Length: 130
Image (cartoon, rainbow, N blue to C red):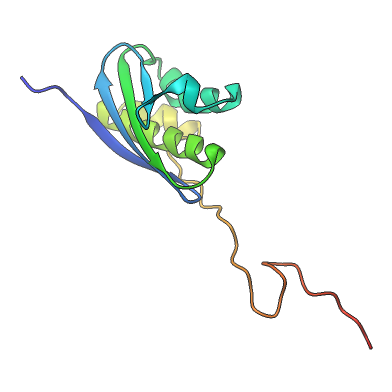
C-alpha cells in the first residue's frame, strides 16, 4: 500500500513553503538540510514547531519542506502556515484548535511599494521653501 502524504502550501510576505507531512518519528527537514542547521535562532524553531505541538502530534509525522523567497523569519512563518494547513488534511478535527490559535490565517502584511515623487513608500524628499 502507498504511503500517505499530506501536502500543503504556506505563505508569508514573499516566502513560499511547500510542506509534506509523512507518518514518521518527528524529523523536520528544510531544503534537504536539518532543521537545527537551517534556523539559527530558537524563536524560529519554536515558531515552526508550534502547529505540531498545539495538536500534540510532534512525534508522529516527519515534515519535509521546500521553501523559497524572503528572509529567514518570513520563511519560518510560511513553514508554520504550511504545516498547519497540512495538519487539517490529516485530521479535520484539528481545524478548530489551529484556527483558535491563528495558525490557519495567512498574514496579509507585505512591504508597501515606493511611490513616485517620494523617497520611499511613506518618506518624502526634504522640503525647502527656497
